[in-house]
Length: 215
Image 1: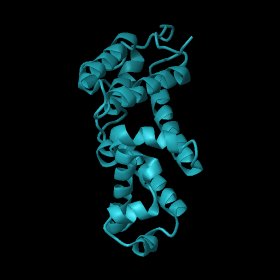
Image 2: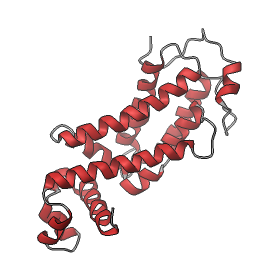
Image 3: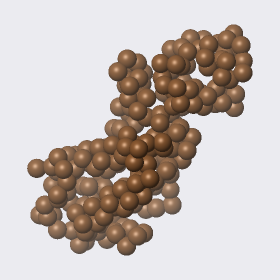
């Protein structure tokens, strides 16, 4: 991708995040990018082309974030994974995720390409959490992964930039990590986390996890 094309896509994200997805038109994007409509159409012939490339760009940024999670680690444990998801990832900075994601959820109702994008992002997200929970000996890893993912993603609506309870973001993060420590005591919870293999040796497979949504 050329630098210019990336700049245009980042400008499209800015429009969606600050003005709402309904205001993303080819003319509005050309104006915000300081170019004529014909010049914009050199990069994206139609709005559908723009949305396809925008979805690919967002997906790639999140893919890099998931790759960064494992960077320099043998296998991040559940606590490390949740801490990473609760903190600002590289994608959050580039994509203004706390403002962009709610707009993408709305777009997904009317734009199939965005629905597919979010399905891909959250499928990988869910699989990552489920793998960690399996390593923890969870008896309902999929249900618990969905519950934890809902907990983290719900924070976007209430604690994101400019939201009413944004000032409580750190205390909520600490509360979620405290929940992990209390319900998954075999996980590495010394602040730096432990290895999955070390946790496995101490696992109590019959322990009942108290996660909303699990039975």
